Length: 335
Image (cartoon, rainbow, N blue to C red; front, side, top):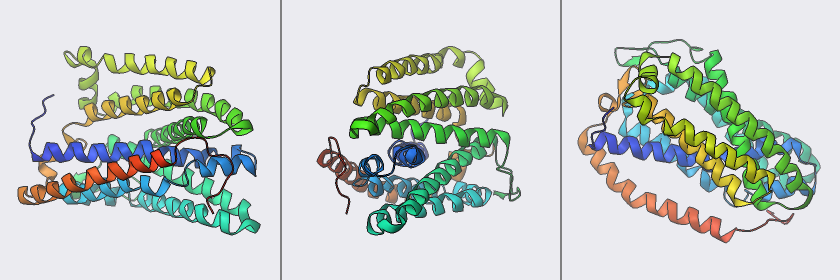
């Protein structure tokens, strides 16, 4: 497996970085929504909501950057992947809309707060599940003929894609619980630690199942992970995953604040490495490489200048927002 540093490769890494940033940052937002019914109405749910209220909409900037970057840098891939996953993309966007509306109206319409709490949970669950199924649909392969999607309306639906969907839901729940361990206090913290341990077990089980199933989807995947010399080169990835899992479990048992979240991020980072190794150099696995899907060179250069200016600003205001709203949240207002 070789990596040539050209414009298409640079853009592939930019989009991968944007998607990973979205997954880990909006992932804990969605995870808190998934866990929301487990908290008692009143102070516990208020603390959970306030833990992400100042930053959740900024986190979704990375989704725009990742999706827009795919459209601009790899238009052919965008034109193939979107028709293959239309129902999932629509479900994801509707879930994000319901979640966003629930954020605002939960505080402004106290009489129907139970309804908005349910909308927050349902929107988060649907968005997370749709994202996971999209990942599974991409990995299992998309039928392409003549540079266009050639499959049906439900080709994305399979046991494997459902497994990846459940895995992403569990992973987001873990991220959300670990973030809440940093932000909440009292009974909400006790409940958070319990659910974090459950989510950790579910996430590790899902990661193991997906890791075992993926190599048998295509010969390329199997060769990358089980043939020499890649077998030796990639051995540190599963070893590091097991080590991080042990550290995560111990940190949760000690009720530590930041370490569980950092370990959860590390698990997602290792998962991203595994996905990248499996897919490279395809942007649509088994069908379209990054070079086949790439936009003209002038377009890539023009957009690269824009990203070089915009991405530092996104990183700066994101870091500033998290710094300003650091510490425990209590049950006070996003009003």
